[in-house]
Image (cartoon, rainbow, N blue to C red):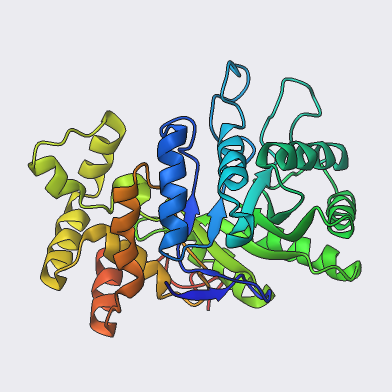
Length: 328
């Protein structure tokens, strides 16, 4: 396994990040344990979750809420593997029906962190990520809450998720005024079929030294050989069928290129992300150990300049970076 720095921080993480959104909902606890064991065994030391993962969100909230964190916590307690991983979780999403059970008020950040620590059965979170921008809470309040958690040793680094480029700039400006490190990562939707973050988010990450953690790196399965799977009889859901028809010409060209390369489409899609120097680690969310093993090939693939140009032709970028993409 290859390793890189977590943004501009000194800590090093694996080039693939184990996403655990399926734990507790799509993947049962014994299988989740097997996936975590297999990930550590192959050298993956970066594990991502969120307080909201594992079950239904309000207003349902019947059972399983926060279960992903609980599963990881029990795994660490039983395996004694806390020091083997860089553990990331998130705050923002609704965790109850009350008016203060969500977003990024200092009150909710404090309560949510304590709850995550309890579920994870640990005394600290390595990367505490804001799951979304909060347009109603001032940065002075957010950073004061995060600074206190750092001072208390409950979190080490802070990251963002689903931020716009100007949100990153605003956050870092406010952090700098407080002589605080601020953000070290941004987690965004990014894959060959969804490249809008190349306009402003990626330039902002590069400027401020944030490592990008792409979520949905295969477009929800679109880039995982969906045409070949359909030809073999595997059925796709209505939403995927609609996407397939929308992108059919690109998919045909893409899967043909991958076949010429002798590589699986999923591996090429992940390898393409890893060629971007701003990317720290794509999030992979296997539901089985076999799926996890299949993703490891991506870290070994080196794509030629010709192949990168072909991929750009099949899946065009948004025109470059802003403002050059739409102005001189």
